[in-house]
Image: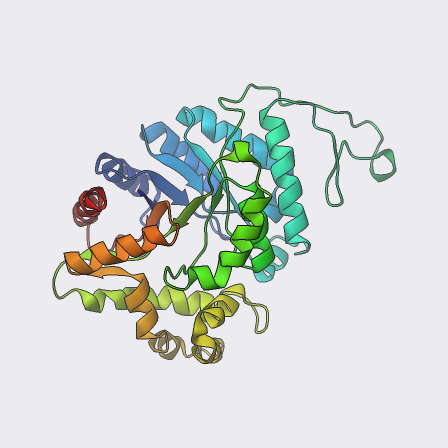
Length: 348
């Protein structure tokens, strides 16, 4: 398995980029650059392209509603050119509260839109004149929807690659099935290696049956918090705030994909309680309600033997790239953790 991590740039762009450079030396294979409703991801991705040499640079994720398909293709091709062929286009939907509240765009037809976006992006990277008659995107725009002056255009500059990997952040059954059919990679949040097959196995199988052979194997990015050593089990609690935020507060009641996922793992009661507590403003209680069994079964925190067994479980479940969080008070400690993790992976 390869190793990926999510970039945290709360300390500023320059400090974040410097840390990625150090992690790259220790064996980091891919870095995800998030975009919620703060700074945009592509700006930092371009900055990372100039500072790094080997690590793949992935948007994690760009919401599909905030850019046209052609702009998504242009953005990925630009980062790919700056990095010498190291870009990964991570796409997802975000949620109605962000898309409609912050961007003022209707949150509709995510499956259909993603399918068409993938088609258009691959057309653009091959430098084909873009002609697309879809339900959600029509290129060129028909005369009755504009001036009538639109014409098929191909990308003006020549991309470094005709195929830039597309990774989809998907959780719902139909979305996972489509991802397995069309995308190059799958980024599931809150992945549980022991329960993933029961949750998504049928959807993955159905999508893979329709997958074009030339696409190759689907990359699967999943993992958890990493800390290797004796007496560190308490660090598993560091995952509680993030889980409570997503399961409890990321979306409205009855329209929270992460809550639905948690319930599908067998934690329906806990998922409902976390949401009730979080939406009523009792965030610390919501964090405390996250089941300890989930933390124990998904984290990579504990003695070396425990972490080794958990790594084997992730691999057996189909994960190809371990997506990890690296705790620690400073960059040096996180680099040491990554180096130790890399050494463990080489032994299993």
